[in-house]
Image (cartoon, rainbow, N blue to C red; front, side):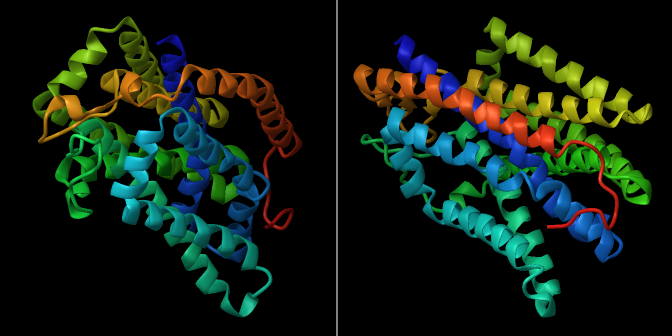
Length: 338
């Protein structure tokens, strides 16, 4: 069982890494038409994510691959039952990548690529939150662990609330990155946007927590009965409070770090709340839930994966640190574009 739990934690870490790193890319994309006032400022926003956005997406690919190898039935259920939603996310990510690459190579349609950059960022930012909402709420599953609902059942009130909450979180995170990387008037607008979106995120988070306490009390009980859950709650509350303090003192980097800690702690709280289920069942027998023990691959497979991870993960981390150190510092209009 130790191997299964290890991979449950590792996949949560990979998804948290993706949410933190590509989260600010998505947030920048959602803010792109509103934060920048002219083409020079739009170029700055493209430039502050240009060197890192494709590397950030590696965390999502790695997380999906790890899920496929470690918990195949969960992967199969997600990619069959959530097929349309996943296709929308993929189309969004493709649109975002294409728009960034084509912007300077097709200047006649620059406005089109700007629009696709916005839409390609908005769709994943919203739908990832909706997916988390369904994972927390549970989905209808049959005895074989297959999804028995429809696409429209995924758009239930709770999941939509979590989707909007997640969107506000990523918008605030993107604004924090923009504030930490830009200068002048753009930086001032980014700070103002971060302060407003962060406050909205807190309000929506409180509303989501109340919803969980009323309709999904067992998830809340799982968190409150686990010491790790209390630790994650403490980290979340501290990061939210220190982010507000950093915003008041115009400390951009601490505000961004606090935003990242909020995201990591929230994903940890979701994992603790669902444990030992990866995807709970709703409206069907509880035993149909996709649990860690019931869906894990063989110990041999998990061990081999762990060996590869111990070799590969330090390389990924080293590359990530190298890229961010290379492109550190603030950016001004005209000095960089993508």
